[in-house]
Image 1 (tube, rainbow, N blue to C red):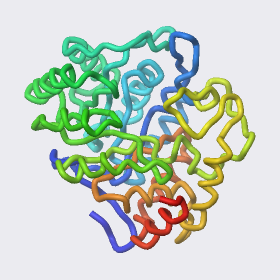
Image 2: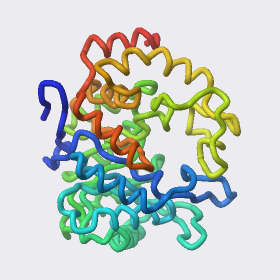
Image 3: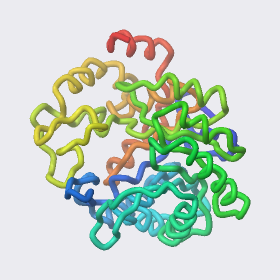
Image 4: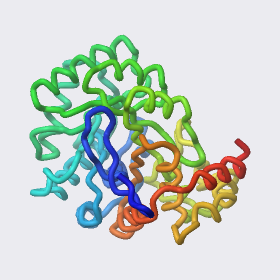
Length: 333
């Protein structure tokens, strides 16, 4: 539902579940964790009390959709989210993910498990950490899982729905063909995928529109590049994944901060994104809402101030059709 100027809610695909048009991604509030080689997988140090305050502030500002994963902070993000929601759990839609193995004590990622048996164990553990009896959206977190195995996992998710443990499910993947495998399930209602003004995903948007799925947008601010706060040569802290970016994370250079070419594209879009008194981040979210009625962006946050800025985008609503066209012109696409 959209007001004359702002935007408030969207429907989570074929499930009919209503969520705020803006969700909050809880990767960053998981804090520091690492892979088996010691490379950072988090966004650096966090203040758990500030994280709790930020979640609660988002709730007060109308945000009702929170996306996390069991592996974020090796279980820590789920625990913090559960604590922050507390007695307000029934006011929100909670999404989490499974498929990655981790050691909570050492906060280390230890591999993957794509078996249906592990899916059930992972769900049980997530429910415990979140302090809830059900997950609203349960998402496969292995983006390149074998489609045949994924069909088995889809069937397992249908069992979880029948048992009342899960309301709906999805696959977090950037491959439309894989997403279509999960979409064959009755209670599949979304695809989580990368999408932002710098990185369009037309095939996935088309799939969501064709099959009545929500497009849950991770990296809606291009890992912070679209916040307008990054400058060339600004080095990030050692525990930040963007300081030693893996191959799937574009826009940053090892030990050198943001890539100059990406920053130039952000700067080229500044006037459009800051129209109507928006901040650059709010403009980037506005582009996503204008891109399709299926989109639900889930920007990350670590502070109350970030929560307030992101939630403030709701009052501005989407960009216009003309502004969408101007963005494409400026980016040469």
